[in-house]
Every structure is written in structure tokens, then in C-alpha cells.
Image (cartoon, rainbow, N blue to C red):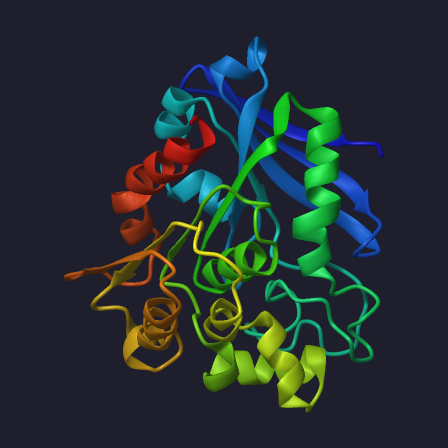
Length: 282
């Protein structure tokens, strides 16, 4: 699989790079960002995957979150893919900000015309890690995942659907119960069809109820002044209740005064990197 380097910038002793490749799963060209810490020059490092939210590309996280210093210090390779296929010429793909382009929702679509390209779940859990493992100095046995909003939903479902694959998971303001919120209902009905029983396979609150063991340590930060929290898009209480019932350990921090933006993410990103490093470097 050929990789084309788009950019490379030195940052905290390491290199922030962006690559483009032809994705088999998504049937289009895809970009991903990857940070190689100084340690990657001599050793294989753990891989930490970041999944971004609605409307984002691979650029938002690498330019706004300020994660580089912590990743450099802990020796983590951090990968941030785009949030959807692009330029697939699907009718309606660019009509709204919360469905189609920039809104892949990390599911494998089953409905026409989306099912040929919109396979972000398989891209993130299979194709991209295989690509990273074969081209970069990472240890395939040490992998974790985190994300924001739609990407927080993505991180939670990837971890919950693949017990043992990821050493740890965390999220900022995740969409915790998409089958019950407006964003989720719109995306899932479009990508997965009208049979709502099929939606549960991509809903963290439902997945955690069937999670086979409690070896997953979950960290969630949520801004208390997040407009999408008050709008009923995120529904963290439902997820926390399900985790409590299943005795799956989750640390949920409601952060006073913070909103849904990257200012919020930048404030607590070091805590999240540290959370993952504890397991990835164990």
C-alpha cells in the first residue's frame, strides 16, 4: 500500500506528518495525521488513535489540541484519521454537516448509496492499523484509542466491540447513546436503515451491557456548559448507568464552565495522554 507524504513538521523533538493513501475499505483517497515521537527513531512505540468529531478532518486535532508535548514525553505514536470518505460523488453527501462528508460516525453502512464507501468502522479498526503497523515503528500489541464527540462515540464502540484489542480508551464529550439522540437517529437511519435493532451494534450504552469482562479502564471528560449536553445529543448519564450496572470501571469528570470546543480538549489532553501511557507503557 503506497503512502504519499503531504507534510512533515518537527514538533517537541518528533515529527508531525500527514499522509495520503488509497483506502480499500472506503474506495477513495484518505488522509491521516501521524506524530512520531523522538523515541520512534530508535524503538517501536505504542500507537494511540484519535477519532475526531463532526465536520473535522485530520487537521483539527493536530493543530488545536496541543497534544504533542505529552505524546513526545511518553513516547507515543499518535494517529488521527479523517472523519469520513471524501469526494465519492454520492448524491447528498455534502448537503448537511451532520451526515455524509465529515460525518462518517465510525459505522459500516449497510444502505445504498452509502455502503460502498462509508465503512469507517472497518477502516479505523482494521485497515488503518494494518497500514500503520507495516509502515511505522509501532508495537502492534500496544494500541489504545480516544476521541471527541462523534469520535468519542467511535472510540468507545471500537473498544467495546473488540475486547482486548485496545489497552485503554478515553473520550471528550462523547455521543454516548446515539440510538436516542437526534444526531444518532439521523446518521443511523441513513447509514444502517430503519431497523433500529441494528443500530445497537454501534451504541456504546448498549454495547457495554454485553461487554464480556471489566478489564477496560474508561476515562470521560465532559464540559458542564456544553450546548450539546443540554440539547440531549450526548446522554452520558445513560452510559454511566450501564457501566455501573456491568461493573465496568469508568471515570467520568464533569468539568465546570467548559464547552464542546478544542479549548476544552486542550485543557485536559495531557490527562488523557497520561491515562493511555499508563497502560501502553506498562
